[in-house]
Amino acid sequence: MRTSVAIIGAGFSGTLTAIHLLRSPSHEIKLDIYLIDPRGTFGPGLAYSPPSERFKLNVRAKAMGAFPDDVEGFARWAKQRYPTISPDDFAPRRYYGEYLCDLLEQASCQPTGHTLHRVHDEAVDISKRSDGGEWTIILKSGVELCVEACVVAVGNIMQTPSESAALFRKPFDPRSYEDLPTLSSIFILGSGLTAVDTILECEGRGFTGTYTVLSRHGRFPRPHEDLPAAAVANLPNDWDTRGSVRTLVSTIRAESRRLGSSQPVFDAMRPKIQSMWRNLSLSERKRFLRHVRPVWDIHRHRIPSEHAAVLERLQSTHRLHLLAGRLVECAQEGKRLAIAIRERALAGTTVQRTVDVAFRCTGPEADITKTDNPLLRAFHAHALVEPGPLGLSPLCVREGAIPLWLLGPLQREDLWEITAVREIRQQAQDVAAEVHVFRRNTATPRKQ
Image (cartoon, rainbow, N blue to C red; front, side, top):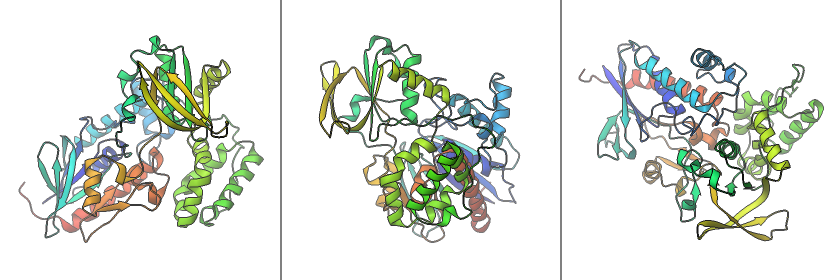
């Protein structure tokens, strides 16, 4: 007997789910897995298809294994493929994409009887049969796929293009960096991990001018620190169940002061961050997002110390200006861009600047009602998902016995911490296990 599942999105989340399914015992039920992605690359996704090797992982290789029970798997793979990479290195993102491709290829060759179908196309609509038996997925090419189960792993929700958005270059597009040696000024909107990667790439491509970096709070991510083994946080056993943002912040501050660093505190909290989030009420979650999130992000999502050193050098030589505020306007002015910035340090005064080019590094859209992704719009139109009350991601609405799973960043509303390898690799394994149970319970005879 055969049953089928569509996995929409072939980045880390979707690829890893497919790998788990391919490696599973057949139990006399063979599985057809349709891995669908418009990029035509199955494994790297956008995150691990950077324009150069200067885009690095922000976690050491020894912790980046794709499976929860083998966290050193990537480090072993990298040592064989690239002997100069050590387990403590922050490896190029491209290497991790190659690693995922290799894992998928190996899994697809295992003699379990399951079949992987790589579908180079875009899912644009979805419907279910009136008797509730199948999903019908409509692809951009016009092809329709009928499957019993559907896993949605499209990664971050992309922002809807606007007139001003067209003026910004894309950080992960190699073409964005081709003319940098001829330019004198760059504007970067956002100061998180992608902004840091963009600055390093600009430096590596020969840019010698100045950067203006703008974000809401004007902070770069904190660097990874080399701390003594004794620097271990002592958190209360029930810290994650107390349900209070005030208590959470107090705990973090106290332990950070005691240790002289927040790094061990966040490392100790990491396994229970999802539990912490679930134990916060809706009003407390809103309080966290309003008051804590900006500081949380720069301490939780750190960068290699050598990257921080580059940023410090650029700031000390007055080539990089990091501002807190918001962008009022960005408009074409001849061959250059005119930007209007409302700076917090100047009591909200609007400042005008002219730059050669601009990069948008503000991250994804969180509201599904504002995305131009046709599939997510279809899910919403068919009442299969709905916007979450926090505007972080959609909430999945399951109907009857037809399963629909959302993976990765699409689960931020429920889980908060679900954008990094550690959490996604566990979620992919759990979802694959649920699909196994579903296929055993619902598989029907099909033509072999």
